[in-house]
Length: 65
Image (cartoon, one colour):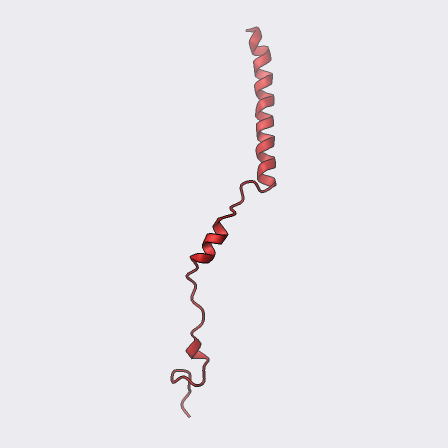
């Protein structure tokens, strides 16, 4: 029973230390995804505007006179 008087406060302090370290690591960017943006550039599927829509020389871009 006497060991609980020591173990309970030590465990509470340990929980606060671990929570503080976790909070610090999240705030300092330790869990930021550094590889995701680099891979997203390679997997970009976004289509740009149709180049023939703005080209007056192409048959599709011309308006009837």
